[in-house]
Length: 291
Image (cartoon, rainbow, N blue to C red; front, side):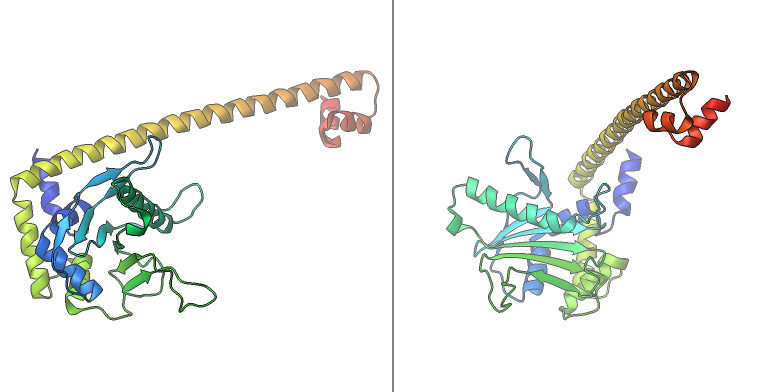
């Protein structure tokens, strides 16, 4: 138990578990949204602090860190992204397609709850990234759909994707947002707002319910890592068996060719004709002849 507690004490805001619990503090979360979007928000309501939306039994699930609706029924999903995930098989970065999938699942969830497509709520998917995905040093990258032939024409589907680059140096953000970026990067308090965030983190870490929840979270993460490791071992074993089988077949075919070449040599055929008949090289046939 002590190990789990010490792990919790070491967490910083960049950890998604702690990030979620800080964002569940309405005053902090509401202030961040207002500062980012330069608008006043009357109130926010937490939908599910953590949920998985599954449309079909075999579909991928997505875990939403913090999902919020404001008084105008605009929906927000806030995520902490520490690493830039890559598909090992293809080498492609996953974040762009992940945003597409998040948006699809959010819309599907709203439709399943009885809304018609023309009643879909405006949505903001907001990633706090500890890396510069687009390598342009912007503090904020905001994406909306626009016409390629005329960039002044916007497809007003009210879906917005925002990548917050905590390492960015270009573009204007409010002092409180910049201080939040600094706090995420280095755990440095540079404003009254980040002092409030830091104090909130201390309060959260001293909450017994949170400590118990973190122990459960850690055990679940360990189970997932163990399952992934076991699947990796099984996959590696299967791949090894397949490669061994292929290698064995190749060796069998080579032995068969060698045996055929020996028979043809005993019949007096030329090295050149045997090479053509067996698809062996002339050098290989000559080596068999010399044995």
